[in-house]
Image (cartoon, rainbow, N blue to C red; front, side):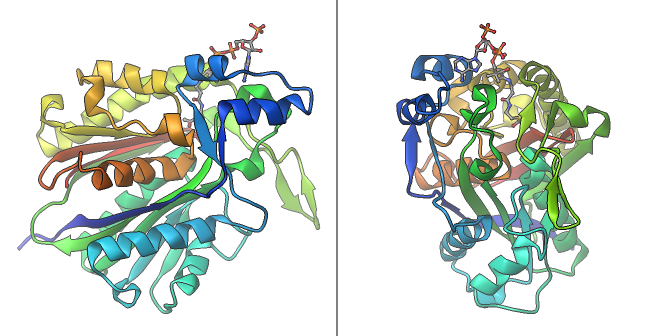
Length: 325
Ligand code: ACO
């Protein structure tokens, strides 16, 4: 009998400190940086984001999201035999955020590691967990996207600092005799590294380079729109489905205009796209599982529906996961 895997629980965590565009504009104005709610909403669809307080790391948000996902799945942490955390903002250079989450959940022994594919990280992590479950070595996995992008923003650069937020989303993935995950499709092309990067690193006891986010917004926009359509079509083809079979599109939440453009290309009405960018901003690897959890908890996503999860981010990396919920 074939072995598949399915999502059995979702969870999320947003830090309590919420800044509307107006709140952020006031903070930036104090440093001589000018922006407005009107500009941010019109160009991006973002109205608010959450930022962590000092001392809170990705592993704290991830552990909280994981606890919620486990409760939703009716599972105990002791039943988890794999933890993957997608993050580009780990607590430390090492150990991995996943091992810290494992410890915070009060368990030990199962493999735990991070995946670094920036905003595509959750799709990459799901793809890896799906393969390990189908191979038979894992029964129950926690797959988490967690980020504290507020730590790597340049608050003097208004073209980037208004776009991002902090948060985490998690799913419990379990072996099943029916899918579940129907198809996965992941890619990378390293020649685009300079259009979206944090070009700093640690060396000889110092931070070298510039450890804040740099982005060529228009280049990212053009690339993102093209690859998101390609990867969605690739996953549909692998599963033998059509775009009309998708019940919910859950894209990476970077910018409402990228989402609208992808939906148009896939001939999907906008009310079939789960949108949280307005309330969360771009939370990188956390954005897809956060959006998934919101739409599961508010009752939009129902068992048996077909979901297309897709992401694109620095690297460049991109990919999609097509699944029956
Ligand atoms: N507030 C007010 N004005 C601003 C701001 C701001 N926060 N930021 C830029 N401006 C000004 C610029 O200075 C410029 O002024 P000028 O015409 O006087 O020179 C004007 O607005 C237009 O700037 P552009 O950069 O051309 O604005 P654009 O329409 O390209 O929008 C944006 C910028 C929103 C970043 C857009 O390029 C975009 O959406 N790109 C996609 C990138 C993205 O979403 N990245 C997220 C991370 S990547 C990922 O997750 C895949």
